[in-house]
Length: 147
Image (cartoon, rainbow, N blue to C red; front, side):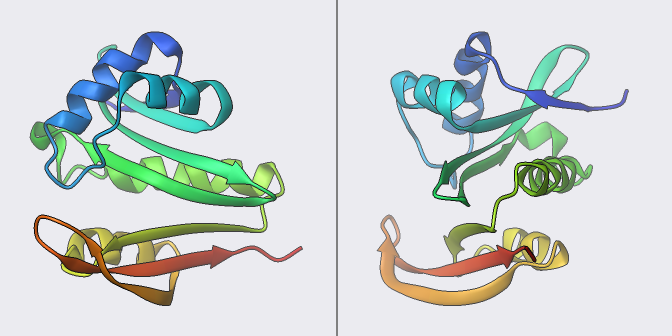
């Protein structure tokens, strides 16, 4: 069955929370924080048969977007869902005249880093010991758009 990508609505927040809690690498936020992102930010949901199976969320500030979280349910990995979420987010950022999309990712998260690089993101820096449990550097990535 095909996966559809759509903007999140407030009713998606419980499913988003569940997906995030099931993913050890995800940022674990409160429902209030996700509600705020859905209201004011950019949250896209991937769903199959009407059930959310992944999401991406970003904040837009002064023309730059920052990816906050990308999560795909374990049973849906390796099916191109994160790829499609990211592709849709990039299209939306371009359509809304963003100047760049920024993010940070654990240095050891090779699958995510390969995904970002596949979409044209380039390393832009490093934050030493940024992550905890375990302590690890964050690699900063940027995708800049021509004006």
